[in-house]
Image 1 (tube, helix red, strand yellow):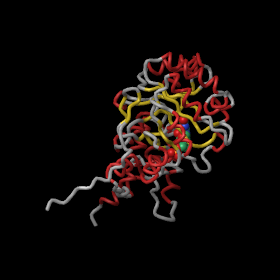
Image 2 (cartoon, helix red, strand yellow):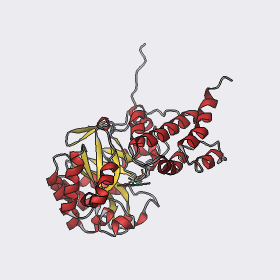
Image 3 (cartoon, rainbow, N blue to C red):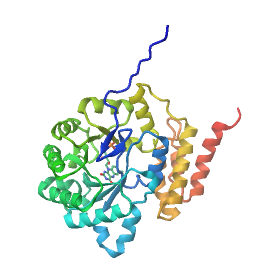
Image 4 (tube, rainbow, N blue to C red):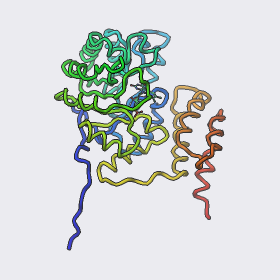
Length: 345
Ligand SMILES: Cc1cc2nc3c(=O)[nH]c(=O)nc-3n(C[C@H](O)[C@H](O)[C@H](O)COP(=O)(O)O)c2cc1C
């Protein structure tokens, strides 16, 4: 008898499109300032399972300022082989946002994403980021100006709302869709929550129920393949965005995609595999960053610590990494971890 093959693919795990751009698999990397540079994004892409990556937020005002223009342009450090990539802009002036959008598209952005989720005072005090959700009139004007300025799809990333308990994501999603926005990502927390507390995915479900054509990407607290399956089940969203769950775990998208396609869990990478990825992350950042090696290594101290390379209960490796000042220091910590596992026993 031929054994029956049972597929345990998740019924909602299907590619979607953003104005014709396929997002396949429907898993996206959240923009994260200080983390989602080319080195990390490209590692994630190589690991597989991620359908869309995004730059960190870039100030639209910086493009108006002679002194900051060059650095702003360098911040979207993407390469053509990263297609599709979204470039995220923040700002509250419709004209300035539209001008910045034209510049990033001229430099190759496939999608322009508008940040309506950042709560840090530096951004929100100027009426940008999540503060736009307090003022739907300005938010809509920004969206309209950007949509009009560029020929590529425009997306928005919002929080549930600005004031605690006041859900603006739902009415705003409808307005954004009517203005021509092609997808919305919803981080299901209010601005004042920062990253604390639990994301309330019900807001994602309500946004999905409200819009008619535009895909909805759910975001907040997806750390495991099972979380992603639960988000698809509970909210009906089209895609799942992962942020902190990917830090020090660039393979997470492959694992989530495999789980959603088969119902099976892949084994976690060994310590040597994790160390090899951390090493490649470090080398690639130093090779491709616009910043000098010393500045990269400062950033890497935090980023590499997330690869959890210590044995349970120990912090030896972590302590060595946070004291590194050169790439050679990092190599001296990581290479023995890789070689030890491959040494003959
Ligand atoms: C270190 C860090 C930097 C972030 N930077 C950005 C950013 O530049 N733009 C943005 O829209 N969201 C930013 N976020 C928010 C994430 O994109 C995401 O919405 C949030 O972390 C919730 O998703 P998660 O639970 O999967 O991490 C940042 C989050 C973290 C932890």
